[in-house]
Length: 375
Image 1 (cartoon, rainbow, N blue to C red):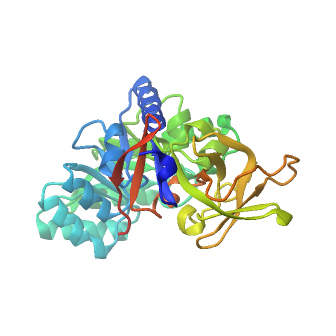
Image 2: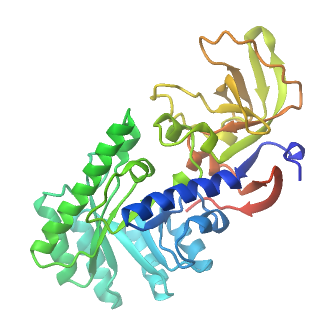
Image 3: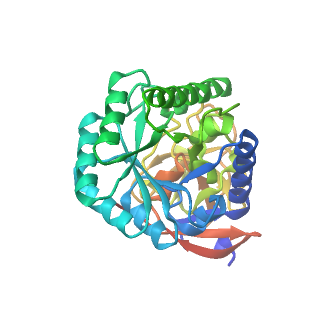
């Protein structure tokens, strides 16, 4: 199918760019001697995830138990649920484990450790647990030096659960302003996780897994001594936030939204398209970066960036395209019905607006891959 015949808006996935992104990450981590645990929260689709998976059975990380269910239905059994566990999800976790999923959970408090251990003991299932480590003050986790890290480890070990290891996520890497700063953050992330694992081992507890990860730190890590796996996911697709961090180029972004020109407001310098925030999402992740990309960067239907043209505003089903502030270029001549591609700020958020990928292969829409949303 010619992409110019698509009814819009549609989510377009450039397969060649996706495969090139996967191969770069695979080669980088292979050089560092550490395997990838693919985070599937962006893909939400077995066809999009499979090229980046080491084996059909995994390993993967998920953000929802719905993701765990879906990927298990497609043969994946090595799964980390990488969001702090809560009481109302433990029965679901235990059910998945009974059905054959090697599902591990994450926690960062003694209360959560007590809860998991009690459930594990009652179910006669030594649930696998990773303790989340706070490496950067970004979000959740236990500081590597905190006394409660050892209390959590002891309680899990002594009361029915399995301390499988530690994990951390350098979310602060998204706030870095230079690639050197990202490299430093990657080392900070590594050192924090390794230090936490060492403390647990020093009191006689096994800690076989040391898991780190974010796409920026995975991309720029210089060495990963002591780490057993890296988690990353958005690198498969990339987006404008990653490009703003210097993690990728605009030409590496594999995901875009195809949209049609539906009107013009020449006196305002606007071109109106049929992709609003329901298609692009409300994510404005580049607003705090050196270059604010609005709601997305505009390309022609072949994927070539149209210089200085961005989606500057969005309503539910309408997007407003205009020249970047300060640009002296004339507004391009884009007649009614012209098809364009908009590169997203955040691949996860834009992907979540759609139920399928239209897969671009050799210049044609050669496949349609179903994706899912929700919890």
